Image (cartoon, rainbow, N blue to C red; front, side, top):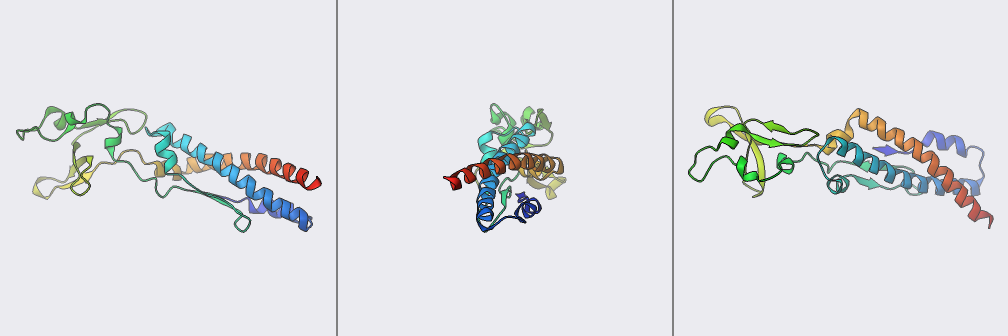
Length: 199
């Protein structure tokens, strides 16, 4: 997501002299960078309103790109905000959802599936079970697709911060937040920089 407000800034700069333009550009950079921080906070809140994820987990994956005098826009990058594995949303003793007992028989819990809460309400994922990743060695939730010997083992995903972030309603919410905050921050930055100029 990118914020720039280029058309609004073009209108403001039409009748300004060189010094005033310099102040406008400086103030714009300051306003954009303050605004993007607030938009990032709003994005984190929007994601966590739906997904059962910690603030630290979500914030870590929403990366800011700041504006500067030659780059009059700021952005938030969500490319690293990949879908979680369902194991992150399983509470309590995960061993009850493992596929087999030591003797090789299916446990009742494993037959029933895995119960987890990736979003607001808990849900039982039938056919899912907890095992160890072959390459990673991590404890993960899996399921089999297909039947018989040809069935493939697949990981079961939990909440996806990136999906929520990119969704249209989330983007509309963030753009509205950006417009409100940029207007306030630009006015504040202009006043401050003009006061400094007059000293």
